[in-house]
Amino acid sequence: MNFEYLNNNNVVFLQGVVENNPVFSHAVMDENFYTFNLRVNRLSGNDDILPITISAKLMENIKEGNKLALRGQFRSFNKIIDGKSKLILSIFLREICPWDDEANSNTIELNGYICKAPIYRNTPLSREICDLLLAVNRNYNKSDYIPCIAWGRNAQFVNTMQVGTKIKVVGRVQSRTYNKKIEGSDEVINKVAYEVSISNLAVYNDETA
Image 1: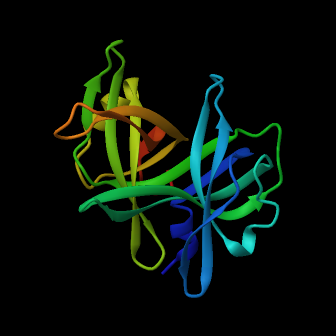
Image 2 (image 1 turned 120 degrees about the vertical axis):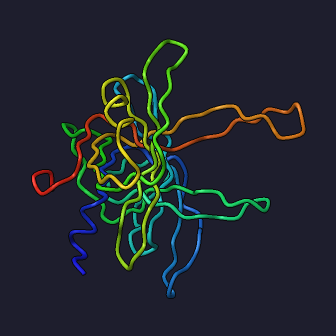
């Protein structure tokens, strides 16, 4: 199996400020992992607050308020919450990088398969949007399921694609808050979703590899 090829299916680069000190998450094969949030600026002036998972081996200088540049992968896993399976998303930190004031602070490239029929819609402001879910292969016969959103002509293009189509997308990882009404009650709670906002996409073939 070509592990380097699979690693290149899912590449994230982020620069931001550590929002909180890391807290213990889980252990795998005697290796401890921690989580924290990274605040990443948008060009619009808003911020994305993104969840980061890190090995204890890389945690030196990961402290609240510190600047951090990283390269990693956008990963997912299913967790049972209140008897229901929920898709949990996080950036898995693979490498700490030098800070670069000239770099784009939030970029992601994915090569994956459309695994659910795209959902095309229009916003109240008549913007065209298409939601899709990408299955992205990684090492050890695992896959990550990454929610993505396309806009305008990209939304029109991806809406014509069939389940199973392999595509390459470039964009940024974003956090988005929304209100959700609790079932059987009038109570509304604030929720946060994480997804890839697509800037470019193409059907994957040898020329786009």
